[in-house]
Length: 231
Image: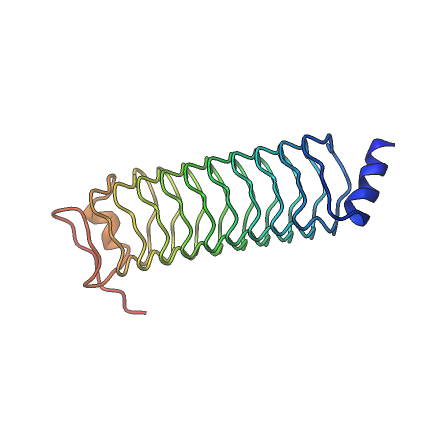
């Protein structure tokens, strides 16, 4: 009964104040939750597919295992939120604040994180294939074993990011800030580092960079070089 009551509220009531609400397994598919206050709410395994959560406050909310496929969370506050195992495929997370969130094993293929704040976020084993991360802040983010094949990181801030074991095949790092980033055991084949700053980046060697590309503006650790991109 509780779930049914909240389902009606999610779809019909505006503005919505559900701080610390127990909404585990709730049916919120296509719910209208723009600017809703869901801070610290328990939304584990919630169905929020295609929900409108633009500008919502989800700080420290528990969204572990939630379905956020194609949901719109542009400008939402998810500071410190728990999102492990969530499905965020094709979600709009543009300009959202996800700093210090936990996003382990999240599926976020083809999602839009343009301009999002992902600083100090734990994204271990996240799937970000073909994801838009242009101008996103990933400073000190944990991206161990992340799959970022063909991700667009143009102008992104990845200073001090941990990319150990990450799959970065064909990723676009044009103009990205990668100072002090860790590339131990990362796969960077055909990655584009044109205009990127990799000052003091660790874990790189010449064999790795020979499989990637850059340009005259690429800044590399001392003693390393990168082929010029031809495409």
